[in-house]
Image (cartoon, rainbow, N blue to C red; front, side, top):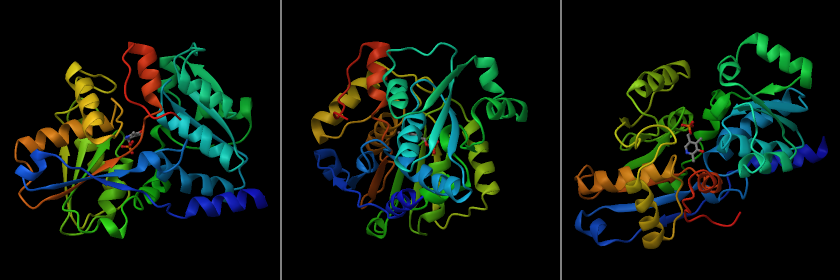
Length: 317
Ligand SMILES: *Cc1c(COP(=O)(O)O)cnc(C)c1O
């Protein structure tokens, strides 16, 4: 208990997060400043937005005297990876329900989760769709014992509470904030924390316009009214969730060569690609001070290489 207590106190402090100011002739030409908030560096394993989304959930799990958390995800999920590491750090055991029956023994995400002590079970896609139903959860309770449930992608009220802390007062002179969207939990938390002179752009990683309703519902359910303005950008999904184009891959390489910042192809690559394209199209008025929130996800690059053979710039973890 005392060990958990110390760790949790550490998790409660907002760690210092570096912010890189980019330099490029196009930025001068368009008279804008572009910065990247490096959430990917916040923790070696509980990286990116998942650090913020998980910490109040873990605190709540401990407050409720749980010994264990259970969550869900795809086989290359950043959420699974981060949850395995974070649960271990605070002394909770973890169960990961993975979409797809056979768990690939070469999958680097799952191997990391396993090495962090997470118990993994693969379920069929049909079963996975029913994962939040009481019957399935009851089955899991019988199998693993009681647990604190963290939803897929980690988005709930506690996650949004954490995401409200992503921006700090040193970012208050920013005019535009860009963040990738999966479930929208991170977007919702940032929307709740921006000032009246700020605009939040959410770059959807998913195909289609359905995300607009999802975000509206989420903001309403969480009673979030933003002081600033928000915009959803839906044309940079590159074919859909976890889909990619050659153009995206070369952009990720270009971005690394120019700015020394690694990106992932699922979320942050699409956001940075969108940012650069919008910049070229004069979406940001002269004088804009743009901040991209680098939400991490770099652990997924190794799995991406395993699936596609394409090597991406990735820091050694
Ligand atoms: C999970 C994740 C997101 C999506 O966050 P949501 O809160 O679900 O919108 C964005 N970027 C990265 C790198 C992620 O791992």
